[in-house]
Length: 348
Image (cartoon, rainbow, N blue to C red; front, side):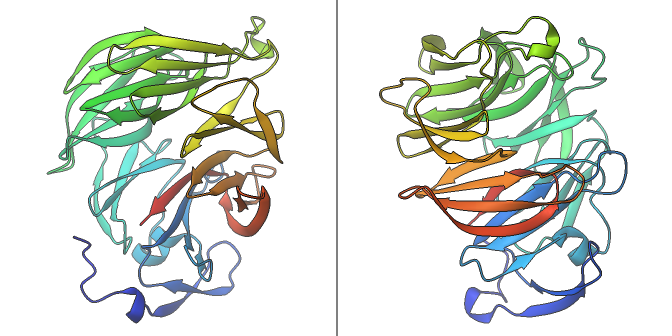
């Protein structure tokens, strides 16, 4: 149950604070539920990442909410975030830690500072168990691992050695599927984790960067090796039957096409390619699908007929969150975020 006994939408109040970004006063809600949370990586060479909040009714936008509530910054770089119960697990990559806050008040709860090394992404599975992908030394392809967290006491209970470059994960039916994008190199594997061990791997296309589950299938979008590697390969969309762990279909892009940011709403798949957002029907895939929106976006999430897209702009100044109505493909909202908005999360 949400631990906001004294707060509700009907009693939501606002407090005045000073924004670290521009020194201007802004109103920050006392509760951050029923809205969108954006993780902002922050400047790579120094400073801190942050989290932006946008209410579902679009009336409230609050920047740097963790620091506003707790009086301290998250650290450098805010890579991603995941939820378990009332808690948000905020993965801070360069600072080698996971900051834990109540997802509705953003008050600090705990932190994990040991047992992780270059942490990337968090998912919850089996209630009291969490998983965090770790690169270790990104120049060493032999020290990558997935940390298994005991969420009852927020400690690392064990680690699972995996192939290099583990990134995003999808939990499904008591297993966790890990995409190995390749860290500073390129990889082409999906690791399958069950409990506290590695069950096996599935070879997919080069540079798997995003995944979604549809029914009993896992769709894996692979970007392919970029041109600068000297071994450019085509992007692909790989469909895996989760009942067998076998690839059921592979759909190939052109050699110079490198798609990213797969997301899903209903039966429709969406992804980014060459400055456009494309739409596919997951039940009848024909590439590339229909290009529906123009724009070079850093992150995409689709939900309930809306597409949420972040623009990192020049990767040094404040970014933005744009919201599109997928019935018309028209932009309906545009909000300022922090620097390098890399993750979109729904806090309902």
